[in-house]
Length: 276
Image (tube, rainbow, N blue to C red; front, side):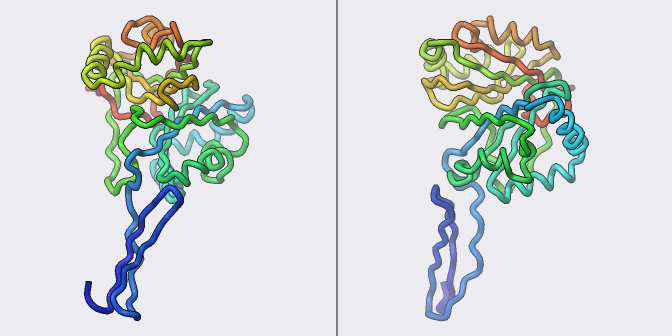
């Protein structure tokens, strides 16, 4: 650094932004520090289950948001406004205008943003779920959860591949005293890369792929949310049979699995089984 010069760096911590300036000389000045892109070693993801309050609010929401979903410029502008607040909306997965619930997956840039997320999603003017239209149940992913790559980078997003089949999201609710049995069954696979890879290959061999698994705590009893893809289009009933009764799926011995088929055109992961 030359004499009379100064340099500032910016670090995002759990308490907020910290700017450090190193100067050479009493009259030195520094340019604004560069913004860090991905400040956290462990990204913070939150799955939100939105439940419409009533049919009137649902109809009003679709009348407003339906046209926006097909407008890439307006959706990009909304995404930029969220990112300025410290949030990235990765997926938005409605079941269509008749559906009672929507699932969305969000990422928070900092712990401060995460602490304010419930208020953002409920009340912020830029939130697509504000205004009392929904009950917004938020589930923060535990460390090591199955989530997408961070959205806080300078890389341009890649257009996701369309699926040859269909996407589903699942709300898993533990049966009474079911948490211990579930984690006893699934825990060894989650902690062993070889067993986990074998489980994934088993899913794929039956025509299904688990893109995201959001649990709030290993061994916990709070609801969990998963995003699945079917290689061939199938009904809710078909997928329900897989998720409930297949040895390599979560099963219904310990869980009640509420299955929701995601509407075509929704914001979903890039396909594991791409359309030809």
